[in-house]
Length: 260
Image (cartoon, rainbow, N blue to C red; front, side, top):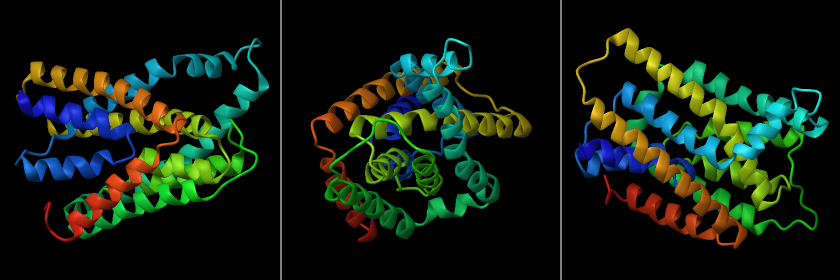
């Protein structure tokens, strides 16, 4: 039961804080000698964090859905196209690398370097100053942020860290970059959950603790909501740099073999 709780908390916190959920799941499995979560649990944890986004950004999501009706605004209607454009890269990368990505998760070098890349992207996004910033993404922004999301399939390269950093580099405000990043995560998390569930059904669902699975999902949902609100507050206060320090130190620790 503790295993499910730990994995749910780790998934909920690291999915949204820019410190890489996949990288931390690899480390926690090694540190605590936990078995891999399995495709069924992975699917449910993805949907737990997806539910957290739907709750926190419910007003934005409702506005986008309302844009499909005559009462909607053109700006919200355009955002649907931007989110679709940003989703294309992760779909392409996922289909191409889905069967071969497992070997990447076993490499400490890739893990450590990816943590350092996350730190570098955050530092770069803070170093570049813009006199004018936008709250909404444009087409070019959406494609670049989508490519960053696709690259974050690598363990250690944070999805939220990379997408928010690229959004800031593209000229979005901290809130605007985070907003687009989390909205873009919706189809990615939904798709990942569906694929993992499909794999679980094809392989045959083994005997498992449904109470433990439920505990993990609830933990990922509640911790995910807390993580999103925490990150938004940190961005507004201009303290995004703390995650660069964290990922930089962790990357060095992993590469020197201390943590693995």
